[in-house]
Image (tube, rainbow, N blue to C red; front, side, top):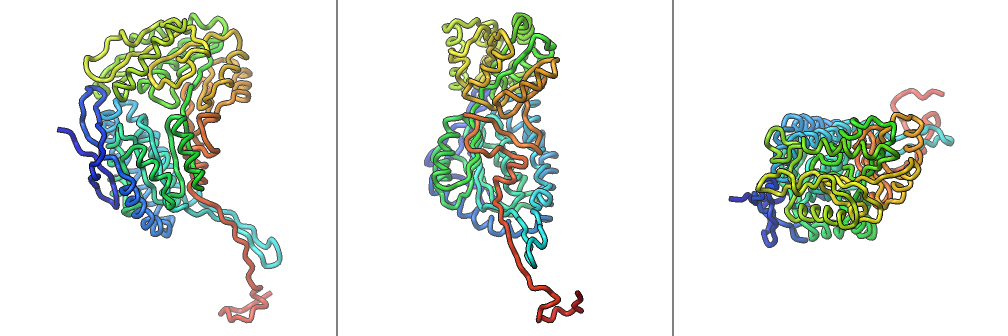
Length: 496
């Protein structure tokens, strides 16, 4: 029997109209475990209506009480971290260690948001003119929405909702229909933490729900993480309706390995960053740029590590890599292996022939050498466990390849040369950079975001930019009579 997965509205589970549904699978077994109800435009309107009322009350709640809710929510997330990770693994497929890491990174963003009294402090300039003071403040937008991807169903919502709620907004989450259940557990924990009903809502759905959120005049802002085509669509449609939009798109992340690098360290990094979570990360390394004579040594070292990876059910101890999210996505990713071979690349390790479970949506780690920029295996965001190696004669060649790429989310360099690393961080045209760090996801008190086709608009996710995104500034200029000359009885002696 499969479970029915509905919405969270006004502090309770609400079964959808069931006019349209979508299956939810356990990717490790291939079995359908749930049916998610996809919201209609009318259902989205109902969610927004309740959120509008909740936002009006929530923004008047004192900062100290909002902070108390955030601290309580933080403690509940910590206490239920294993439970949340298990829900993620059951519907996404990533191994429990990866799922636990996802919850931990989301928790960091909640911890950042607990500092909201400090984060919302404005400025004050006294006596800018005779009897005139000027000060600034930031106020919430009202109702805001987050549209989140399947690959991080717990972390990415926490990137958004923690800051949005802390500063006084009501937040509507539209999670991926592929793994929707953890969003409902987050809603329950928000309620247990003391968040008033309606401040955090979950509306399950697909494009119909997304379009309804974009079109609704009382949704003031949209946050999105996902593919570049959808990011572009949401940004264009949302801004055309005068909404604030932060839209993070796809990626093709490069890792440069210079001849002086520690090859074992670089190979370990390439394996963990390329194949972790089956490559379904927006910060996954998908291209290794091997510079000079390091190529043969590096390819050999990576290839030697792949057989040690245990591909299997993420709930089983010892599993290093789980399945992909759906059978269709697995088949799409596998198709790139053929495409690379036909284009002239060398398939060093073919994940299709790995020792894989009989059931589920599994594909083994794949390593492809002698890739060039004209091949689809290089150009496209594959979003799977396929690592390509591009040979480069010089550091300058590697830098040019990265800077010519459409995507510019994250990149890394492995080297012992501080001068080369400093030049790389200065000249590479990418939003997030790692130096001997393969996945340079910023900590919560910085902000996450790429350049070029990896970001639409100019607002990065979470951190200080998240606080600014979910608030708008006011500047107040005030003049008051001089108490010494006032004719009003102030009740105390007036002195000069």
